[in-house]
View 1 (cartoon, one colour):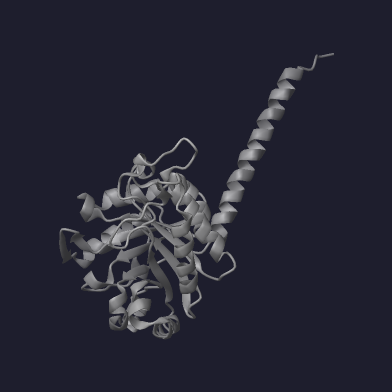
View 2 (tube, helix red, strand yellow):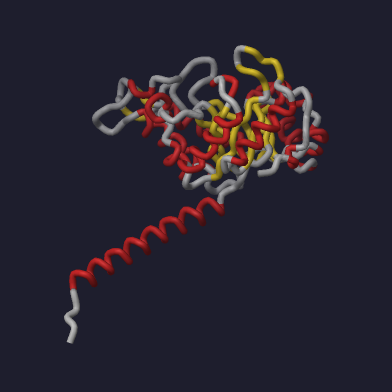
Length: 301
């Protein structure tokens, strides 16, 4: 009779267990992402220009989401923002309040450096504001912007585990928890660089657990790059954001140093590159500098 090699059986069992574990993890990730909301075909709009937007024209050109800056609430009041949002909804457009988190003229450190702890006082005040925005009738989402440091995140890492990256992630997790019983989509912009953690405190994989959509700001003109870079950037962030959808932010003007509107064909090319790289959608930055519109639904992978 042939002897049974117990060691081989154990190795096979261990291998099988690992395969089952990895398969379960991948399935969990797939289900999580499938259940999250998408933000396809979006555009950012400055709050002061809310009433100048031709909603019918945007709808005809395939825009499905508008990120309206929160300053619109300060300028026009909640009732008028709600009325405008409902008009957008009637045109098949969802409205998200675009919230600047750690920068609004001056930078706010997510860490209280005196206490060497998370900046909970600021976190709680900002989250109260976000929740008020989320409760405005007609509002479908919250778009978190400036959830980062200005480039010096590496300076704030303490031995007690209070780090720049943990601070940014903690804030986003608290926002997510506060909105979990509200029917709103949560998205977050991130820098389109590969050292986001070191310089900006943005751990994209962790952040993707807490938001529906990660939006890398692939502003090619600011980086002196082209559509190939946009495609590669989309692929990179798609590989990082395990738990969320990815919508690529596309610049519609030359650069921050030259706000001349780009030709429509260039914007189309850059948008297609984002989708070819695996992005779930594109968001155009911004409405004010978009001279000529085209149907975003015509951009296909």
